[in-house]
Length: 255
Image (cartoon, rainbow, N blue to C red; front, side, top):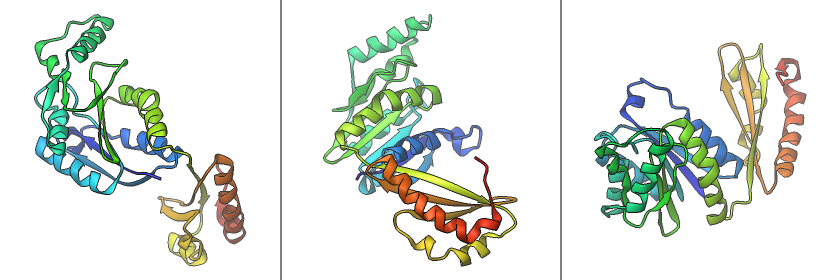
């Protein structure tokens, strides 16, 4: 099965001006299709730095998804960065410019000249038409790897991911597995004590078991990968049963 990395782009993210919700949405969509996510990262609006991190991610993962930096302004450098990462130029697409103008008409607006920048994408890239906004998305295939660049606006990103990206990934990588998770919530017991009690479970490979400490509780997360949702749930259920026998007096069912 393929692995993936997610890169969010925007200096405003690095400065803490806005909260990144895109990574979580993309990660869950990929998880539901059985794709393992090895790493996520955030980078500012600098073409050279974006190109560097794209190239690095593509050495590890078959799927690299970026969000952000596809607007019309000078500080929207993702198109140029992607071209730089693949060693190509950006090229103008008249049909893409017509799509952009159509979106503006749909919104009752008139594009400015700098919007034409959005009609330039890396050579050999495939356009992903954005029916929900004015920033076109694109993907670039290279051997067994693919870079997919999506807008940073969550509404646009979510629709493009669901409508175009996931069907593409399902077909291109023949995705068949699913990844499911289940969390048990405990109170009145510390993370270190739980670790001692369920040490052997934390060494499992499938399902995997991990701990997450919160202010007043500790979550025990069970994650399973299988060929169907039913099979994944069955793997989780058996481990959950055993964990409940050990941690029963501290488990609080929230669902």
